[in-house]
Image 1 (tube, rainbow, N blue to C red):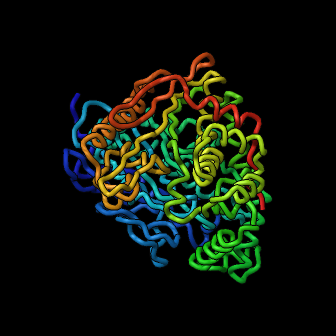
Image 2 (cartoon, rainbow, N blue to C red):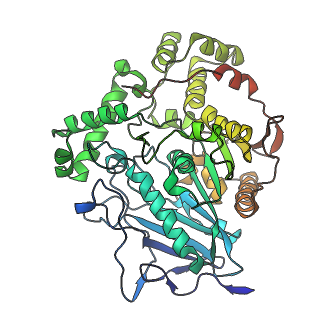
Image 3 (cartoon, rainbow, N blue to C red):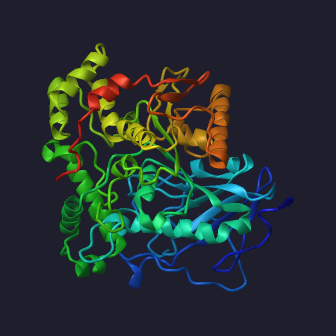
Length: 503
């Protein structure tokens, strides 16, 4: 039966909300609180229910962002006087037949920066493809993941679970099916998705998962505590619950930035010199009892369908932005491998696979595989071996522009394609320049794959099995599906566990 799925006013558990129409028969309802502001008595603690409101709340703009120092194109800056930051946004077709599958998106940003308001995350095109799309803000940096003695760990993950609970309780009013939710994310968002697979508190809140470029970054408690002490020292406060609670959020943001800058400036500071992500999910034994690879290998989430993807040159974005130091000689390459705990045989193996490549290419290939690509592919293989349904793809689109500049398939370049937002503000930086007709065709194919996977669990190519490993390679002018062509790289990493997560 055809019915309104995003009416003028929608009743939620917190109160009635009114969104706004956007192009193509979609209504966007933005900045809906799903939890109370996480400050005051709620700071460094589990999210609390959002206060209810009377009348109709106009939800026509994004809510405040989490405390951070980043300035993101198209997204509002963080302001210390705006605390109501735990909000969700919903895009839904105004009229559609029956309840629609739901895509719940968790943004990336090294667990330190980012916002659901970033233009590349606009959900309108995916809604036009037949989904109800939900995006959320959650606590970042020290507020979300910093170690506070005696208080709750992984607060950012708990915020995401609270937002998923809001979806379960409210999405039917927007035309979504609470029994057919796909949780999705990229980078830190993909790491969060992987954590959702292991968390008892998230069980039953989603049916499928999409994860692009999953970082192998689950912090042991000792590392989290040591980094918290460094941040406290940089802030000039004791690393106690009282000292940290007394520090204003902007003080901890500035102190975190100083710690990152110190690691980046000091080649002798070990693995964090190359990968200066000082926050991440903590294996605290409670909120996060085990790492995702172990959980998938044990088959504890085999009922969840997985769609995984990574780019083929992940680390080139970090090199391009200067957030990753260059390595251009053999001595530096050997030092990088030693700092990451990588054996000499692995370095020699990459040299053999890339015989004519300069040192920088070898270094960036190893770093991208160490942090993102091999972990992403490994999660897919582990899920398939345990009896789950796993689909694997790689983003390989590469373009050379008239000025000679090359847009590589680097980290995050795939996101605007999958959302259908190639013309959004700031996206030209991610995709390397203005899109052409071949890019637009690729975007339509990726949007369709996401929509079909959310609806049916089938993105359009075969799943991995114990006997075969079909991988879809997204590219221009066309894609291809073939047996995994990275088996030589996988062989190099067999039995290798990078030891980069240490002080």
